[in-house]
Amino acid sequence: NAGVTQTPKFQVLKTGQSMTLQCAQDMNHEYMSWYRQDPGMGLRLIHYSVGAGITDQGEVPNGYNVSRSTTEDFPLRLLSAAPSQTSVYFCASSYFAGGAIAKNIQYFGAGTRLSVL
Amino acid sequence: DQQVKQNSPSLSVQEGRISILNCDYTNSMFDYFLWYKKYPAEGPTFLISISSIKDKNEDGRFTVFLNKSAKHLSLHIVPSQPGDSAVYFCAASAQETSGSRLTFGEGTQLTVNP
Image (cartoon, rainbow over all chains, first blue to last red; front, side, top):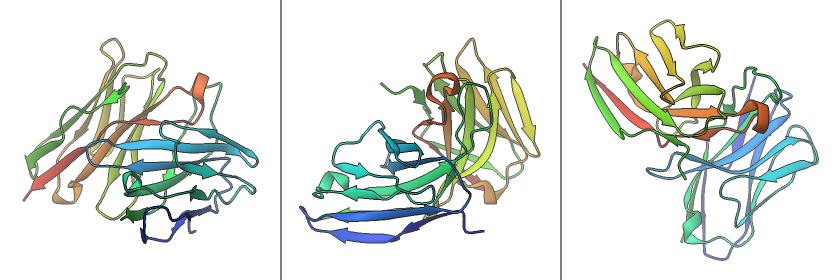
């Protein structure tokens, strides 16, 4: 059982370049999300999706785009990379929870370490 | 506005002793709280959780305590082991209003010395 798979593991970009970070899950989870982790700031939510065709912005969405055409995949696009986007990016998935207190355990991928020069 | 705060960036304890990691929150809508553990070069992994209808949840060496009136939760690890050395993140969700969306604290680096 692969869980949440992120590719690539490492990437170096030049300022202004674009790229897509891939995320795939095989647990049939409705909810998927992208976070970035920066020193001293924990994990901050970039974008999330509650199902195929539905996406919404998180806490730090500027400079990133997402789409969700299938349940399994949730790619994150950097349109024009900037040094401020140097970070470690994590994708996570879970069953969707809402309206009642229920288990909402998000499962994370291993991360993509991105450097923008 | 940091809605979930872990005020201690680091904690060092001796093997066999208790580790206590603390977390404070400001949003009274939060009703579900989780602790994640993260090793270097890996993604966070779920450790233990608690819903707002409880004040304690225990799983082996790990116990989470919730004090709703103080908007405070803590993770106790007894006894601490060197393999517990990792970054611990506290997270919270308001499932009635925001569903699965999690808000994370800054993390606490725990070091357990042999």
